[in-house]
Image (tube, rainbow, N blue to C red; front, side, top):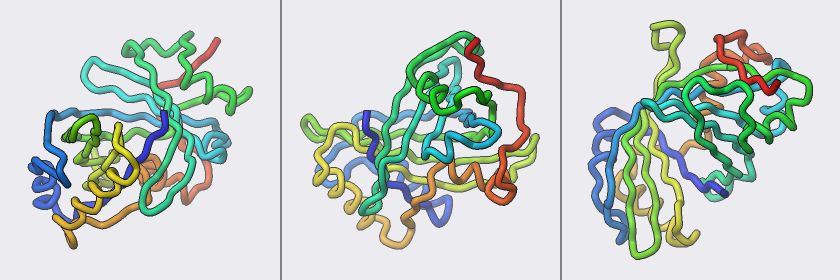
Length: 220
């Protein structure tokens, strides 16, 4: 699928909570609201082949659910990031010997290099879905944390607006409606969770992959 997403940073926690209470946007009405706590582990090769190709491989664990996602950046225009996104469910811990499409895509880029965990982000998400007729958009109100051991090393408050089934014009109308509601309290951001975690883990400064954790994606 093609993902379209606009991202904002909340200037303070009260704004973050206020967005989570929104019930209507530009004629769209809130239809579902749920909360989810996620652990998102990002993988790459020792020489960062996925990153250099503009791609991301992510393992998401939320409760008992587990899925792997491959993303490729396609562009950033008018404040909206566009990506190719492929996801597949996995049983928790069942990484070895599995060949879902997201992992095949990443493996093709990795070549003979192993794919290993680069860093993990914790996300406390409040997910809001809005509908108007057949059109649907999602607003994710996220607290994103990078930890070193038990210590919080970096944290930010995000609001993501994702297009699920709306037209491009309608989707941009929803974004503008959110900006009108919070004109100074939300700031546009082009920095993805992956890029934020990459910097927080110190990989941007070092220019190489962190020698992190024990999770490995094996294909043999």
